[in-house]
Amino acid sequence: MSARAGPDHAAHPVPDLTVPNAIRPFYLEGAPARGQLVRLGPLAEAVLSRHAIPAPVAALLGEALALTAGLAAALKFEGSFSLQARGDGPVAMLLADCTATGALRGYAKVDAEAVAALAANPSAARLLGAGHLAFTVDQGPEMERYQGIVPLEGATLSDLTHTWFRTSQQVEAAVKLVAAPTPAGWRAAALLLERLAFEGGGARVKKTPEEEDEAWRTAVMLAGSVTSAELLDDGLSPERLLWRLFHELGPKAQAPRPVSFGCRCTRERIGRILAGFAEKELDDMAEAGTITVTCEFCNVDFRFRRSDLGAGAP
Image 1 (cartoon, helix red, strand yellow):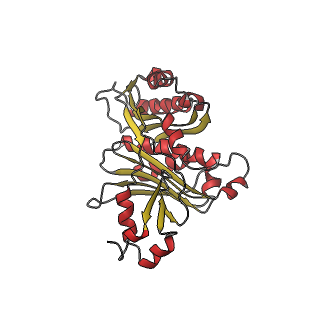
Image 2: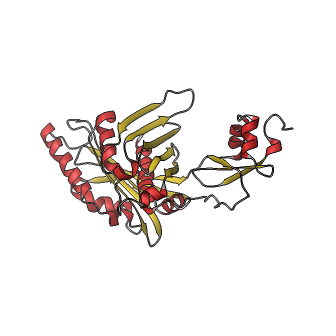
Image 3: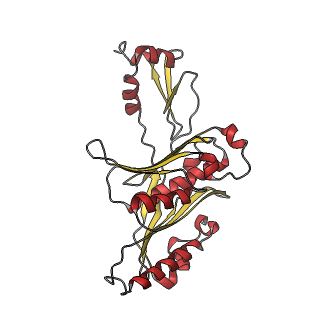
């Protein structure tokens, strides 16, 4: 959220958009693996087009959105799950968060001139620079937050996520992320695969530890064969794609989960924040008696009369 003084300006209307089958959880009968297939569809265009950010940054933010939605769907929690990267590169901050009900939003703080000075198609490492990546589960003020932090060491956001799985979650995982403009607008997708603990049988066919290892390696190899075009193809159903990739391991798709445009700003909430500023700060924000606050996530303006705020308010 940013406050500024200045004349009124037009803001894009906030879309009422839900993709009902954006996330398709699944598991493999023939391997110790479960996963999430995430395809944001038109929601990616709705979020990424809110701001005039360079295409490489939009692609990185799109990957972060798909990843965050998929990781949130794999957890059992109330509240929000967020990904936040802070570094010393042209993208000083990258943020995506998703609630337990699938409300998704994202934001990138970027130096566009610094991005333009980089070579074509810069990596996530070049965009973010040195810093850290934090994954956080926030279940409200009365609950302790869970947070896993990893250094920004890796060429891609997938590399960073692998590090988080290995160090914070202590599980093996495979991650494929992609975001790109298409004829239908921006699209973003993720294929996440997580290894399950050895069960010695159970609901699945009994396997030895060695057979479990081999089945996992096969699942990772098959997941790695998916192409960006397949992940971004709106016409290719999740069920068909999962069968195409994993048919030899018996993929079982589970009930889909929706994702919606999820900026949670409100006029009331922003008004409470402004009420905490000192009189001098409010005066500095105002021009012609009006304070304009722009939400960094949805790029919508909220305008307040200076006389309605602070000690002088009725």
